[in-house]
Image 1 (cartoon, helix red, strand yellow):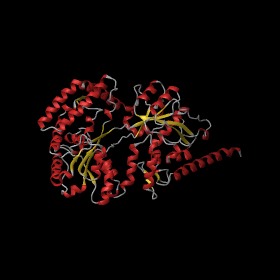
Image 2 (tube, helix red, strand yellow):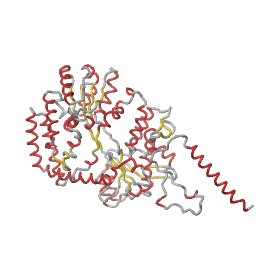
Image 3 (tube, helix red, strand yellow):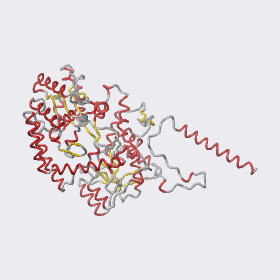
Image 4 (cartoon, one colour):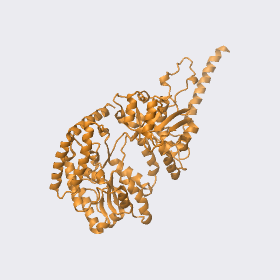
Length: 564
């Protein structure tokens, strides 16, 4: 009997192994698992081979739901406090089903004082959510109070996978990563472009609107037919560049709206930043814009109107063409109102206007960065910093993002398709989904734009074009394909009290004054004269020194991006 016992044990082991494999196959149910989601770590206590060593401590992964996770979190923004964790749909589900409880710390309207007090007493929250590169976070880093994430990136790979090649741009001067970005992306995003009044366009015979010549002739027709009752071209707030900046991009392939922003105020040429006023493309654009302004084809109060005044004109359909860094915000709201009284009215978007002879696919009216808007930091007060990072990494991955946007798996979505997007069910409830997203918004602190935007559009894409959400359909077809990544130009603002920072303040004030004068110029020659003198005046303030400082920082950014 003892001789036959080993073969029998072997046979039983084989059968058990086959049953385990078959059970794993049937469990999949034909759906694809979440893409790039870290696999569940093996439990060392379930090893069948007693000779095999348990994994080293640094190899054991934290797995959501295996044991409780509780930590404190603080939003370092004036007027912003995280809501109670369980008051949100995602927080309630994670607390009840995955043992995750986040204790939110409120500042009661005194955020600067609150964080200063916590820093002074060394009673820091375990996680802080605030701006990227916030000065207070740099103070904490220098004091050794922040946890570096480098050892976790390969172990929990969602951030590294979805962030793409720009992760190094977030590293501090010591080369380490301390921040977990929010709404980062490796794909185009943004809403800059042109919106056209459909009713007016139809009444004028739907003429071509592709080139700067087309646009000029169209605006002339609008003025001739409607007089002062309609604004031919509404540029939003000209003092913020807005729609006039969008027009600038029409005159050069690869010319970017960002060149005009106060955070750059320079145009790249041969590896250096030169004055905007020395850029031939800018000068040509300003002559075109000045002509539109002289002929009253542009809103004459563009430099002093308020947001509310612009919104009122858009909402009532009193603009023929509306251009802005994000015209979809106002136009999307107006669209819903205008079609209530006229189903054939409202607005539509057009492919970006371009100068004749240019490649229309190399004209970018808007820009975006890959790094998102703010970031989460883990402090050395954390009892288990790896567990917090692992949770954030899960939260930013497909399962976490779908929970935040569509609710728990089973109702509105079930499993994943071959591309890793959620499979929406027959029970998908658009109204419920909208409420889920709205209620979860305050705790979306590590949002993943790269994943969730295509996921949201998957449901929308199955609807007829005219039934799709107005903003979403034009983001997919017009704005996102025509925005340019300007991550290389981030963090180019000097410290306010530095020599370059003082120069920047003076340059910004004079720049806007010169810019406005050039828009209101009486002729092409007048435009050149204004810009020539303006450039000299800026250089006298130290503009060239500011450009040199920014060139050095820009090239540092380029080097970092190449290291990834």
